[in-house]
Each structure stands twice: as structure tokens, then as C-alpha cells.
Length: 114
Image 1 (cartoon, helix red, strand yellow):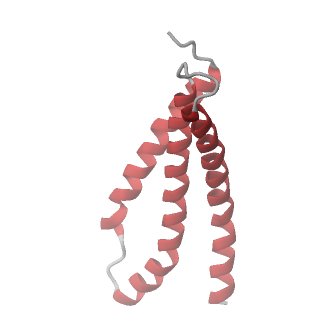
Image 2 (image 1 turned 45 degrees about the horizontal axis):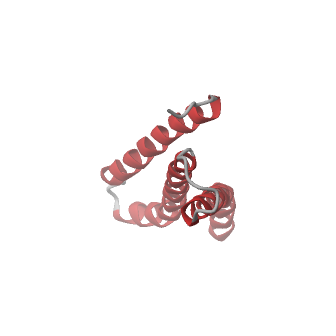
């Protein structure tokens, strides 16, 4: 039996929250504006923002899965352990870069509109 600490419980809660976020974003298709000109400008602006948010939720889900994969009792020289460590680091960095690029993308859209 694997003992869990506070970080593991936090990762479990954030895993459930990221799955819920992906479900809510996937259900967002019916809430688009009905006016054609408004819909085109709204869709072009929010499509990239929505993609960035979905990417950050997806990368965080992968991070949570790989963190719990590291809890498995694997041999130290196992290729699976090394790939889980690499996946954890890469998914964490990709999550951070997706979250950081969202405000930068909004600033770029605002500058183009002005």
C-alpha cells in the first residue's frame, strides 16, 4: 500500500478539477452568440484562448497521471520510470507555458484590434 501525503491529495483534487474543466469546455459549443458578424469576431478571438485553456487542462491531466505513475514500485534502472519522470517534467513545463501564453495572446489580440 502506498502512503499518500498532502501533495498527493492536492494532485488528486486538481486531477478531478482538470477533468471537470475539460468537460465544461467541451460542452461550451452551444453557448456561442447567434449574430453572424458578432459570432465570427467572437469565435476568432476565443478559439485560440479556448485551445490554450484546453491544452493547459490536458497537460495538467497528463502531469497528474504521471505523478501517480511514479508512485508505483518500479526498479530504479527501469525505462518506464525514466519515461515517467520525463513525462512529468515535460507536462509540467507545457502546462506552465500554456498558462503563461494566455495573457500574452490576449495582449496580441488587443493590439491587432486597436
